[in-house]
Length: 269
Image 1: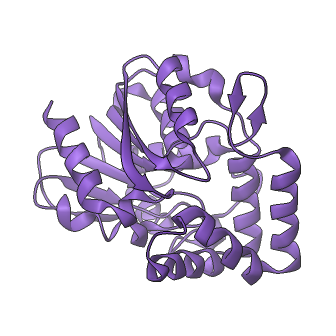
Image 2: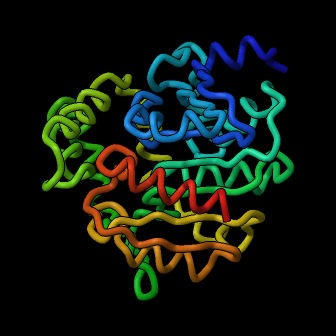
């Protein structure tokens, strides 16, 4: 059993603000807590914000990385619950970007007593196409090729993926920031997280959701189309879907004011 100090150091936990409600901000694949810096100014005066890096990301302790633990998203969900337990947090509103929507769902199903609700920003329970009833956006061969590019040309992989994720119409500065984040992640860790993210299928967990959830989807998103949002909403009890007039997979970076407004309305209601 890790101590509070060990968990805080392992996941580089940062706490901002002192509001009554606690929001845990969980970053997506290839990112770290710095990606929330555009959203934080809109939330920190109202809420207590708990930020962290998954093991292997950002300023976390890379020595704590274990391929056996992090070969599946359940390992990342353990990071979330262990942080909550170490800090004695309950009634947490988990704000998860992309794959962290699923990670948060795993954590909240395993430990419902720790959480109050979820806000999922551009979530997807499965990035693979599963015809005839589900289209996650990618064929298996597409993901295999992407992982192959990671092995052959890691920087090239980052430079290819970043604009696809950010959206071609959004800021080149933000795209460059995302590419740099991809490049700063250890390749071994990044590949393990990529496999856990893009080859997984957690659609079966959607009906098991134990908390209300707000789903924020872009009208144009190469990684999680509006159809994915509609699928999740149809299969998740207590979910609310908001399709936003935006492009890209990183709404918290490209449209922080809009995301903050949706979060404030959700938590107020």
